[in-house]
Length: 155
Image (cartoon, rainbow, N blue to C red; front, side, top):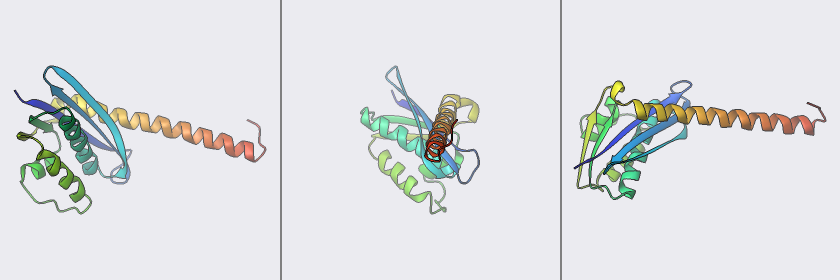
C-alpha cells in the first residue's frame, strides 16, 4: 500500500516577491504527519516546490518506499512527471532537489488534484503565513519599543 503526500504553497501577500509559505500532509500506515513553514521571499511556484520538497524529506525520514504525491500545482506536477522543461532559472534548484529526493523511493507517482481535494495542505500553507505575519508584527513592536526607549520616549 502506498503512502500519500499532499502539498501546497502560496506566496503572500503578493506574487512575486511575497513570502513563500508551504504546507504538506503525509499519510503513512494509518498515521498522519504534517508540516508547514516559509522559505523567504520569492514566487508561488517556489513555495509549491518547497511544499513537495519538505513532504518528500519527511517521507524519506519515515522510511517510506512507495509514495503517491498529490498537489494542485500543474506546473510542479508536470515538471516532476517529466512533462515540460523547467524554464525559470529560479525554479531549477528546487526541481533538482525534488528529483533527487524522488530517487530515494522504490516507487513514486505524481498526480495533479484540484484545489478542492487539497484543502488540508492549502490550510497549512495559509497557517504558515498567519504565523509568520504574527511573528513579524511582534518583532516590529519590540523594535519600535526599543527605539522609543533609546530615544528617551515614553509609551
